Image (cartoon, rainbow over all chains, first blue to last red; front, side):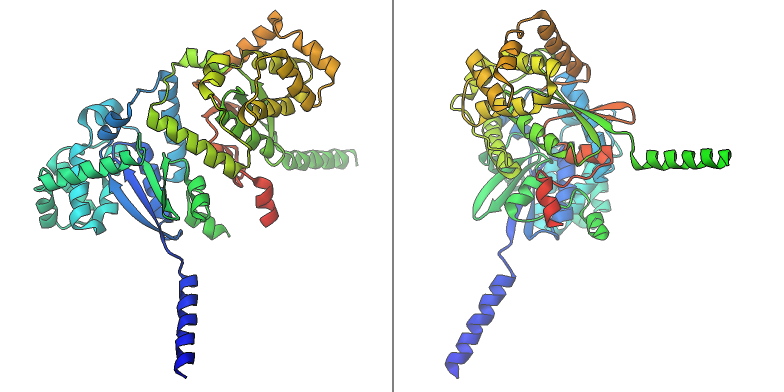
Amino acid sequence: MQILYMYSRQVIQRSFKMATPIRKSVELFYDVVSPYSWLAFEVMCRYQQKWNIDLKLRPFFLSGIMQGAGFHQPGPSKASYMGKDLKRQTDMYKVPFKMPRNPAEVILIKGSLNAGRFLTAVDMNCDQYLEELTRQLFLRVYYRDEDITEPASLMSAAAKAGIPEDLAKQLLSTIKDQAVKDRLRETTQAALDHGAFGSPTIVAHVDGKPQMFFGSDRMELMAHMLGEKWYGPLPELAKAKM
Amino acid sequence: MQILYMYSRQVIQRSFKMATPIRKSVELFYDVVSPYSWLAFEVMCRYQQKWNIDLKLRPFFLSGIMQGAGFHQPGPSKASYMGKDLKRQTDMYKVPFKMPRNPAEVILIKGSLNAGRFLTAVDMNCDQYLEELTRQLFLRVYYRDEDITEPASLMSAAAKAGIPEDLAKQLLSTIKDQAVKDRLRETTQAALDHGAFGSPTIVAHVDGKPQMFFGSDRMELMAHMLGEKWYGPLPELAKAKM
């Protein structure tokens, strides 16, 4: 009787294991000044429930990556193509992207250091707000052409992301703390260690091995390697049609 | 009776028109030294029957594009990533790619001028062989690590592409003719005029307007813009599953 009981427990445990395969983890390294990162961010958020993955949002500092990996400004034909490509892709992906009036000022002059530190402070203290704060910062830069460097800008994004005002103020007061600076630096270094040379950098852990993907355009390939299915950039619509 | 006859003829014509929408034309500009061009070439060949398109293969000269558009060697992280990316993608696309032992020699020193001229001569005289000759040249460089600059190499590729020996010899004798050189230059210029900065460059004519796409990774987007469906890189397998 005892043996039978133990046996059936083993069977139950075994079938439980079979029914719930180990979730794979996917790290999305991104900087909110990178428009292709927005595409990857929205797609990964859409798929985090659909695929058997744990999505880990990893805000990093793109300038640190560019310094570490070497960077060339695109020539005029490539720059012009990228503008068109972003418009077409964000249309198809239903991401409300608008190019800011002065992209060079947004990306190269104003940059994203404070935004990256604020995201890092949120990640360290209350990561349940990280996804929505990320989205609100993308919306500021690449939809409404608004600042993301000033404290008031970060507070406004935090409010839209549902972070209580007192908490947001407290988080904002920590963004120049050594712990926050160190954490942003460590995250950036972790991406560089995976071979990053731009944003987004996606690291999927497949069978215990990290697989790095650059850009927003390797989703179908990543799905294939994760053993998951790609339903296009609008998976919920695809489901509705089936 | 006459009126009724005319009317039904109109109806028939109209429904015939509705049943056979105007085919859209898609130009694939490529150079056989570009491995991502091979991916795009195979995918476009797989889709030319499935989609309502006329595929026009347009062999061009990548060095002419690079000179025209400015070119930077990728940094070490990006170069290493591209090697992995090609391996993963060609595996998934079922294209038998192998990186040659010395890619810099293949691409930058030996180059593809003779191969481009031979493809051009075939395109001008007997374009029914163009697809298979293109494939045979890709297989030489990016599968068997063989030369594509010598006359004997081009003759061997031609034989595998089913071009009769006499015809292949005659075509080979024309590759330094002014007409062939001019045609390759014109094709390269046409791509530059569409904003090309690398290979492959794909120009889809949608509602009479040319839409340029760079690379092998905008197929799903191009399908969307053409009003066609993307079934992944192996459309025949996708069909078999449905």
